[in-house]
Amino acid sequence: MAAQIRIHELTFVPFLNADQIQRRVAEMGREIAAHYQDKQPVFLGVLNGSVIFLADLIRACAIPSEMAFIRLRSYAGTQSTGEVKKILGLDITLENRHVIIVEDIVDSGRTMAHLLEEIATMHPASVAVATLLLKPEMLEFPLDLQYVGFSIPPKFVVGYGLDYNGLGRELPAIYQLKNPPLEE
Ligand code: IMP
Ligand code: MG
Image (cartoon, rainbow, N blue to C red):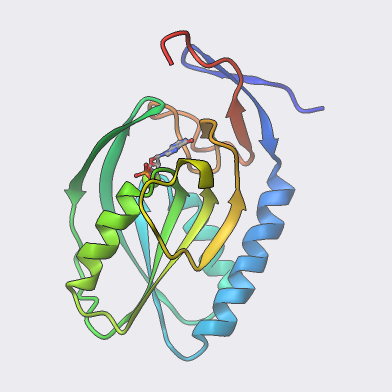
């Protein structure tokens, strides 16, 4: 059995192993490829969390595509702050493009709702969302999510791009918080 790990002061236990993740990402890639053949979509990654997933997803998808990135922030530590800040804007136009927003995780949905509104003003040909993880019980904003890797319980997770205060992104597997701190 894989061991638990520590990041900063918190302990995490194994949740999704690298094989499970890779198999699911490969399936998502094939599904997206079937829908976007000949459309040359733009994969729009939300930095930093989506980087690892996006890198694997576009290779699993294996159709001509472009990538672009945007940076937003709504999390501090293991809690959503309730406010979405745009830290870095887009350097390409999305007008008439088929856009696939790529996220590591949709939690309250605030970040995604905000982003979808903003992308809509850019007149893309179409917009879809690919998120590796979804915490359905945490959703506060109604969202149409076309590609969801795994629906997971409402516990904080790290690994495969997801961080806890900056650490844990490089882990090939995903770990779940073991002992929530007393103040939660
Ligand atoms: P939302 O706006 O509440 O949906 O939060 C989305 C963002 O919060 C994600 O893009 C992540 O960066 C971060 N986030 C939400 N849940 C987790 C988690 O369990 N681990 C790490 N980051 C998370
Ligand atoms: Mg994120």
